[in-house]
Length: 419
Image 1 (spheres, helix red, strand yellow):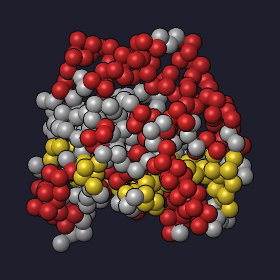
Image 2 (cartoon, rainbow, N blue to C red):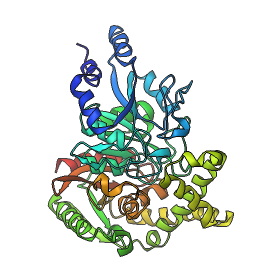
Image 3 (spheres, one colour):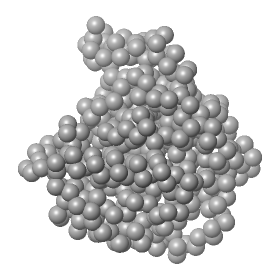
């Protein structure tokens, strides 16, 4: 048997199909996948299995974007990233569930219904790349593509107990990916281990992977903003407190040099200005579908309409874009003394689906996205590694490096994960 041929076949086994029905993670399978893998194997090539978020176009395979508007859409072309994967021996297993239009951290507003967390089927998988994270965590596939705008790869990776990597903004072409906020959108990778992330990145963005030899033990900076303001965590105080304490215990137990650092520029700008960008761009994208807004899930429609209600001016938008440089410069000053920032990825473990349905754009949205917004705003690479457990549920730890330092980030992630 050719290596990894078993993994392609395993995705279609009765076991995997049962797990998929339980988690609702892969919503459309590639019926040609086994034949495509066999063809590669006969040529002496190694087929590599991967699932792809249902926002990313795949020629001949339905791409619904989680919405009634596109429920019958079958693209004629592949997204750029899918073309790259196919050229380097990857087999598309299927399309993974997503929150409609990628607009939510819960993957509950989807025409296919909620994706369920493999660790507890009564709980959310996170989002909006929830289907990708659940498929990996359930062992249906070893790796899956997601998209990350404000944390949509890292959040579900955290809640499902797998690795979630958001590369530096702009290094992977997003052509053929339905946009949420083009100034923030990034294709990311969710995997069962770091080796599968590296295999995937080597195919789609090899320039991000250069050899890095760490000269010293990693020095970790804990931004004081990791403790979210009270208005963000209202209603979740006990869980948040437990995550914060477990996180600090974990950092201390690594034995690495660490320090809590002030980042006043980030605190003043990042969380405010990123929403100016997100709402301005997101609402603009959906204005052309305005006659179909009645088909949207209520929480998604409310978010789009909020962009109109906020009434941001062109000056507000341009200021928000320009402010990113000031925040990046502050990070640069911090990283002269430290190697990476470290935070919890999410402030809580996965909530129950019944507690989220109908309230997707309520307090749960803020508490899930709070820690991931910073790296998205400045385009920095970030990764969630699965190392914490809260009430027997996974919570990730997030590492953030300087822009373009993806290789260093992955090297430090390996080092830290081993401890």
